Length: 438
Image (cartoon, rainbow, N blue to C red):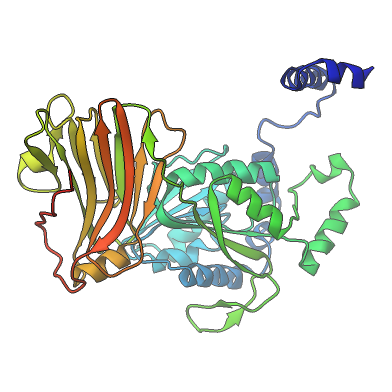
């Protein structure tokens, strides 16, 4: 009977009916779990064991190895870093002294662990050289602003949660990471002998037994990479957990972490050619090096077609502020702490617009632009995903990112993405780039 019904009912309706039936059945057969099982399990675990037992491994040494990996992946003293699953401070006690002028954010599902971590840091580092914050998080949504974090690490986190929850955390982490930032996580791929032993031990328990304590979840490299890609990340490299491939920052000794570690970066979204509306939306410029400042320049036609406006950071209000309710129908806002600038556009006039970037500070402008780690994101309310431009290869100090061609109701974004000019040109506050071709 079922095959006959499946052939007779449209596929979309069949899936809908099947979902309704399964949900109805689950009301009567659902296993009773706490509202947040991870929080409940780790609160219980934290109260039963010592610090080293709670987080596993040789407490101090593992923290040093984790720090070594972050340093190898470009940790900067002024970075804002999220220690996701910070536990009782195994990494924090080594990482916080490294962040001179940066921001350490310890996040955990267990308040007991956060309290112990905070006490540990207060005792061992009474005058931390950076800002320190502690956040209890019981959902996959980070309590952090968009594009506010340079690096997120998750050591021994995805080893204890289901793959679907790994995806949910990675999905929201993409929102808070700055362009050019990194997400670093450890896991237990079955290619490790230790992971296979963990899997076999877990398989001796039934379902209820496996969820009576914190889970040890094994996986594979291919599966974790695919989950990351679906969430919007690009896997860059792996550090195998059974190889001595992580350098301790204090001694230079190479050690193995035990768990395999993956490094991710946000995946660029290929530019689309045409917008469906006359409103461009927002253009966000972000960069990673806090010692540099990037200067955006947005120019376009004024109503009437004879004059052009120029919008860029300047002491002149006409050039640095703009307006959304009258020409040029665009404004500029600068966020130095987040290392971002945003240009908002409420209306477009027929003609050609251009968006470009130069660097200020750090010697010659070409070198400064290269080191900045810049990325431009274009957002439109009718577009499902932002368009992302990354800095192209080259040495020129002026980065021409894109043109926007407006012809009546047709709005076409034309990628340019080239670098121009003399690489040794001095980076300055003032800049007047050439007008785009009309």
